[in-house]
Each structure stands twice: as structure tokens, then as C-alpha cells.
Length: 317
Image (cartoon, rainbow, N blue to C red):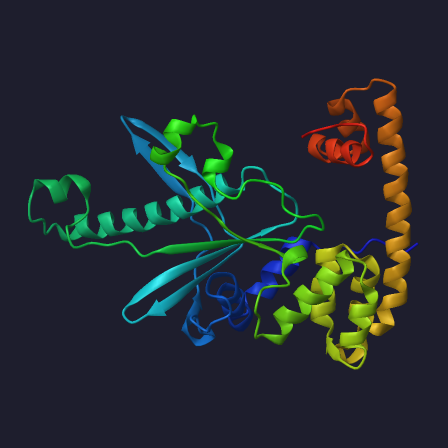
């Protein structure tokens, strides 16, 4: 059995996306259908810590929020803040997390402007003094993307409104907050121009589909950096791929040499999945609650429900 590598997926992905060319290509694919609106040369590293202090009516509370990667894009004399969140599992509160991150980013800049204005003390009237914000002051836009790397399709909410229980007559007047979501497992339609990004998404997606023939067809005569092998292995949780990438001399690797081991890993996972499904069905027949089954199998209740539904034991329609 292959020894478990101590490679932290989150760290690997943060390092991968810090590259300006990759970061720009991701945002162009997600937001502009591949058009080259954001250019790597415009980007510079920005502070990922957008934690802030909230004060109202004599009450104060600190709120911590650290984004995975943040870039500042110059746009004439102005700039846009671009934030990236890496997500390995479906998070049913993700739109709220994205909204909070954007709001704290705006709050942080607002407080910085107010502090500067206070030190200068040049107010036109009492309204500006009380708000700490001059009439001509403006905040810079924040654009955040959540990249979801999980094998199964995202079945969580896509916007704040999806998280709310709102009477139909109130829906038009309740403010929504949509999030920009990219799913690696459903990324066929995305237009990438950066070879590294295209390679990572295409191979990861086809590993999830168990479409090894397509990987072999496209990459049998191609070599890519071992760094990409580690990234793909971290995304798909392939210990063998990470191991081969780390051991590859010269920093280059060929995907075809790893395919046989990937197939073996897939077979083992299939066997393990079958055993887990068998346990779930057995527990369910014995009358064990869904919450207890989830605890025993280390799955979420929603994952247990999905397996039971796929086996015809539960109807969630």
C-alpha cells in the first residue's frame, strides 16, 4: 500500500494560483468566457487577511476572514480586488461566506479611508465628519470566485436567496447575493488559454469520470511539470500521482506512466465505496437513524441520503 503523502491540498492550490498568468486565466474563463480582460502584468499580490472590527451602539466584535489568494488589478489609476476561495467539499453556507468576505473587504477599505480622512480633518460638513467618508470617496470593487474541486457535482446553494426561506411574495424585495462558482468536475465549457490551467482541469475532470482513454489520447506524447502532477494528485486525492510527481527527476513527467496506477487506485476506491454503501444499507434496514449512520460511516447526512436514494431505499423527491 502506498504511504500517505503529507501534501496539504489547500497549500498546494494556494501556491498554484499565486502565479499571475494562471490566476488571470481562471478569472477570464469564469467571468468573461475566456476573453482576455484581465492581464497577468496588471496583477499584484494583495493582503489575504480581511479581518475587521465591527462596532455599533457601544458594542464591539472582531470578525476574522482570510481569503486563499487575493490579487489587486490596476485599472488606470483605480484597481479591482480579485479574491479566490478554494473548496474541496460542498459547503451549504458558501454564498454567505463569499458575501461576508466581500463585505469585510469593503469594510476594511472604508475604515482605512475614514482613518485617513480623520487625520487630515478636511470636512465639507458635519455629514462627512459623522460618516468619515467624503462625498467624492469611493470604494474599489471586490470580485470573488469559489473554485470547487470535489468529484460530485455541487448540490449546494448558488446564492444567498437559495439559503433563505422566503415567502414567494417577498422574493422580489429580498436582496440576493450571487457567488461566482467554478466546478472542476463540470468545467468542459470553460475556455482556458493557459496550458497549466487547462492541463490541471482537463486531467482532474477525466480522472473523476474514470475516462483514462481520453487522458491517454490527449497526453500520451506530452510531458508537463511535476508541479502540475502534484496539483492534480492533490485535487483528485491520488496518492500514486503525487508520489510519482515527487519522485520524477528533471521536474517533468508523462501522464501515461501513471495511468495504470491510477486505474488500480480507482478499483480500490470502487471496492471501498461498495463496502460503505453495503454498511449504509444494512444500518438503514436495522432502523438506525440517518444521523447515526452518517456518524458511523464518517459521511454527511446528505451523502447518506443520496446513497440510499440511489439504491431505491429513500425517496427525496
